[in-house]
Image (cartoon, rainbow, N blue to C red; front, side, top):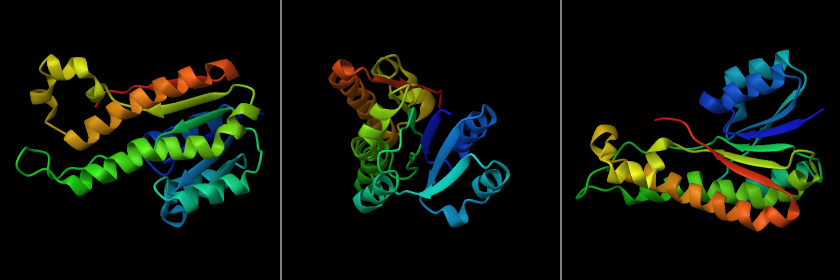
Length: 190
């Protein structure tokens, strides 16, 4: 049975990936910062015995290490990073919220890399050896140059964190190439 580990699985795209993969017969390791408050995820896991919910805060090294210790060598076929934040405040020059920007980088970029480092050997033990992250078309530098900033708002924190994520995963794919790992960055609009 193939194994998916999905971060940010308590809502949105992460929860939908959990639903889709478990419906296809995969074992799903679904993570949430606060599993006790993740009602839809808990309901889904209660109805699907191949879904196991784990606590994980991608911004907390201890939380990441705790999960890595629990999964001690368990093969993971697909490591899917779907946790992310989109700060809403301080999005215009003269009022930029730098704390929000740091939080976006901590979650959307550093969290992905932190979890990937901690679980890399689990992925390498899997059959598929895939690492994926949810990105956005808003992270495209071409879009900024083409004028889409006005259409989508400024979103300094979110857009720059996802642009950095795209670059980090490109570097990761190149670094892991000799080991036979497939690393990709998924893109969605919005």
